[in-house]
Amino acid sequence: MKHRLARSVIGALLLALPVQAAVGSFARAQVQQADSELERLIDRLMVEHHTRESLQAWRSALAGAGSHYADYGFDARTTARLQKCWRLAVESSFDLPRLLDDIRRTLRLELNRFDVEVLLALRESDVGKKISKRELELVVDVRNREILVAMAAEAKRLEADREREVLVEAIMELHGSEQALWVALRTISVAVQLGSEASKPAGVPRYSADEIERRVEAEGAATWAGLKSTVRAQDAYVYRDLNLSELEIVREFLSTPFGKRTTRAGLMAFERSMHAQALRTGARFAELWQMQEL
Image 1 (cartoon, one colour):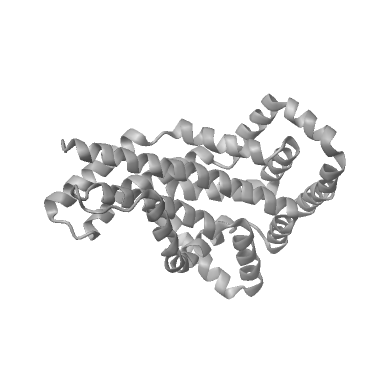
Image 2 (tube, rainbow, N blue to C red; image 1 turned 90 degrees about the vertical axis):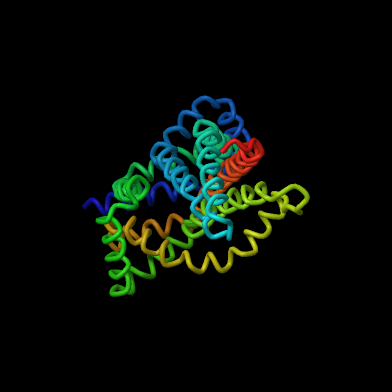
């Protein structure tokens, strides 16, 4: 019964999507006038998608990235100074309210009130709640041994159920799961390498931020290949409570032009905010390193 209700609700929403195009410029003008209401809805959507918790988890990963300086070939003293400088740079530059504002600003540009209301309705449906519960567990406690064991078990479950595997992998691709993880890792890598360049002695050529970003992007193909198994296990865990019919509902929604557009908007919002934060952290590292008070 719950499954039939979920399908009917989401089916009705999908049928309503063409109305958005038919309303035309007059409706869009009305949406723009209701700016404060749109902001309120976007704030709700960010809460439902655990945006704050996701950024806090990313901060922890960013802070821990200083350990990579041990692989740069520096002597023990320099490595310790680099790692200390990195910790201080993250602590003093990470600005959660600014990151949230950046994401909110991008979503306001990319989504209208109708978009957000549909996304909220989906998130608050039975299917959406099941997904949200598991997503939050991963964000808040991804290092929990029980969760890691469960992720491995769910990945094995996919291997034994071809129909389920096909659906989860389709959702993974449509939802941009690999791209989202790569964005998080890429921005951290850019920040770390900016710090490494700042540590070079005066007179030694340094890569610019643009050059570093191009290098990291060029190296991304190899990194991306290694992400698939991780993302597969994570998504298998996130969708573990959904049956085949519910997985099909998710795949069907993400396959629509609306689903693709709103997914792109979410990825864009996170990428822009994380990129800006990575540059701030790298610049702060350079300032601290030049102080030579570590």
